[in-house]
Image (tube, rainbow, N blue to C red; front, side):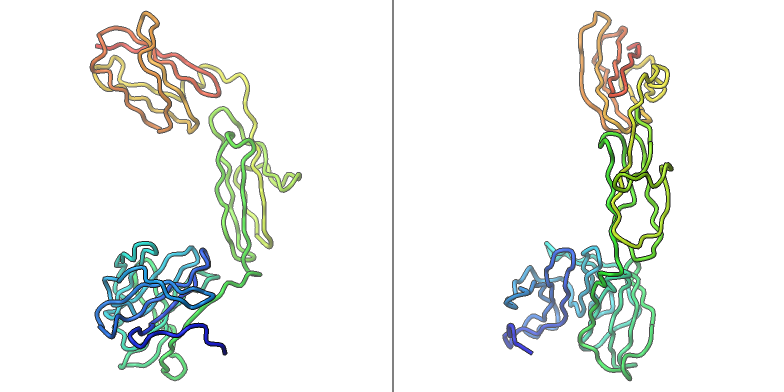
Length: 319
């Protein structure tokens, strides 16, 4: 063993955890034996130097980091909290139904996302408790080494058991893809491609080979996977089809004109008066958009909607 760094006698380290998403070690320590509040710190992995982020508003006894980089702690009253890594602000999740004593430790299984707590209390000694990160409720998984007080509980990523799914769209404006991320070996993966308006889905490709012509398909992952969803731009979109994608109401209108669309691609709205003069022009991204026409003079107006698939013009009467 080689001592990397030592702590001053006024600091009492309680627990620490390695964040696999950032490569940072986080820790908690008692404040000069105050038994009231806890310092939230980072630990330099090379030198052991400690940097205080802030003081927590709870007396935390444990610290754990989820596979996606979220920090959790149990306080001395037995409540599970989430900790903001930047501000040290805490959010209460729920009561574990256990009030601990003395030294504790906690860790996420980095391969499954399950949260385990090496809990100790006078009444029944050391127990391995699995906590629900959503509710905070604890489940007893058994006694630790004849009830021993375990001061360090850690988990590591088994790199050989996890694989990544990386997705892309070709062309990028052709549509959206979902299902990318990290998966356990032999896990079933579902990927889905959704074409934008004016495009149609063609196939999923791995390198240059077609692996599926279904927009949504499942496969068992055994290695890192890179998939591309191929889309094709449809020519000659009819005005009727484009018109059905945009609904304007009410018509006639007195104050607010609402435009509702069933597409997700960008569109430009242009409003003209009956003389052909441009009154307004703007892009929309939302599914619903409102135009305030309350101050428009009474009369006939034309709303032109431009998309990559074409354009339509709708007549609107202002009362």
